[in-house]
Length: 225
Length: 226
Image (cartoon, rainbow over all chains, first blue to last red; front, side, top):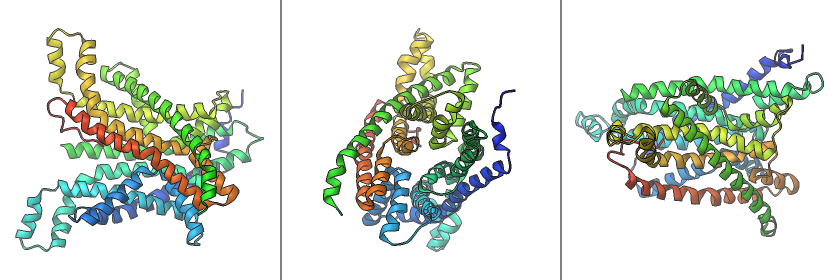
């Protein structure tokens, strides 16, 4: 029988290593997402303040992040920071920073639109009941906006997970890097390794992202009801 | 900042940007066609093909372009399917973008109310005519905002092409940093190059969005650009 080469995935602990690599990528996305949610809420609330200077600055921030490819941001932080601040950022640190920077902007915009969508009488009723400003936000506005926010926040997470594939280009050891190591190690014993390894990585990403995007779709449908 | 160095290397960036634009144009055009094709299949509910299109859309939306490129460029040659870097980039962009475009069209098609279609049919138009003259024009005009967002998204995605050995902006930047250690200059030129590429498109798309809002028919406010 012809050698298919699929064994490369199961030789030694190759598959386990790929999974570990996937987890390294996923961890970056999850940490950055958690930070983005926190900072994004603050940024979103900041954007609802009617102040020209704040709105101008946040607009510029948002548009800059939107218009720059994430890879460019990664390059800027990874190569730029090392030179200017003299800090030797690890690739992982740099990518968490960039993803948080990006996620905060996107999340902030989502929070802003969700906060605006809460009708004014909700704020006013809170005030009429003698609640303080933070109480109105904490007990009335935020719980309502979270429901509205959830679908798009989950799809932002999916986008973030997909974007973690870029971090290999600034030298983070994650699933693609591990895949390359496996391919190089079996260059002579299994010349077809690349096909199977990259195929497996492709499917791994799909396996991680698909449930999230389904979840986002379900949440959106629930919200529409 | 070394102005002389910047001046000397501008042609490199111009060339790289040209490459990005060329591939992006072809790729986005292909993506547009793939998207139109897929959304038509779903709209007309062609059996079997409909399921395949659905599978394709899920697969392409839930995987990163970079991994798709690696698979195309490093994986497929092992079973004798060889693509050049440029072909890979274009195929990758069409594969990734096609599903986004299909979703954009779908949301547009869904926004056209059923009354429009029925009215067309009752006026004696054939199914094809209704699609061509009634449904599609309205659907396309309502999906323009999403479509524009997709174009910008896809141009941004082109930044990963350096991974399949295309001499794009990222590639040139990394080269200059590696050879001359002129990190600042190279990064500045990179940022400015992308700004020059994307800012006009971003502005143009917001103008276009405002323009096509007039082309809407009836209640178009229900369509939200995502």
